[in-house]
Image 1 (cartoon, rainbow, N blue to C red):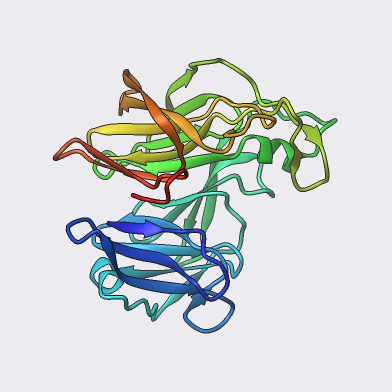
Image 2: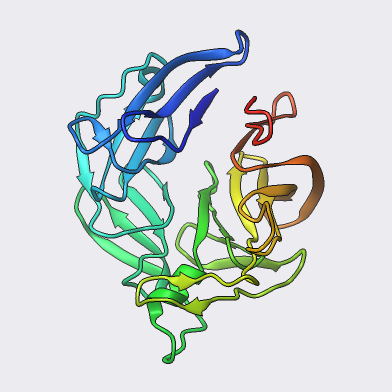
Length: 275
């Protein structure tokens, strides 16, 4: 089981954990500003490779899954990413799709990492001249997942309980709101980010997708609540947007993964520190 952790300086972002032996087998990709280190580490998977996006250094590189398992994490080639995206995913081995570029009035940015060519899709529909665009974009920040076969694109929002499904070209196919149907609540803190109030609510706090299903971890809590940044409900959707299941968890979690083959969910307990 590959874990991506919030590493302290000098620690590793990637941890290979053996479910069979119940222990850490290897670690890779240290946090730092030196060679073969990353300031930030956003993970995308494509084929048998892991793509690591460093928003701090504005670059992305790929490594094989096998090398991470072996504890080796040397990226021989990086590609420049001249923008700051909240979340990223690979459409193919050349096209990176990023969400929430603070300089763009569109939700999705398509970047050819080899040629540098860029295009945007899915414009924001609620721009307001009284509010800095970067504040609205921050309030609209979302996770992105891409279906491995159809290349449909899923966006799940952090501060409003909306999900959207697009085709690979950025055309909307489905939009759903719920379960609580609330809008983003925020204040204007600066020209670059939203201000969070006591009434600001978290919607989806993490996402995981397989070829069959969409899994979304949901909070619904206000910022004044104890577990607002974590989820206690897990929603399952089909890729055509049909709600299928709702699981109530016995404790809050943040990161998780799902194995469709044996119907198991893996997560890290915030209460006990165990998997």
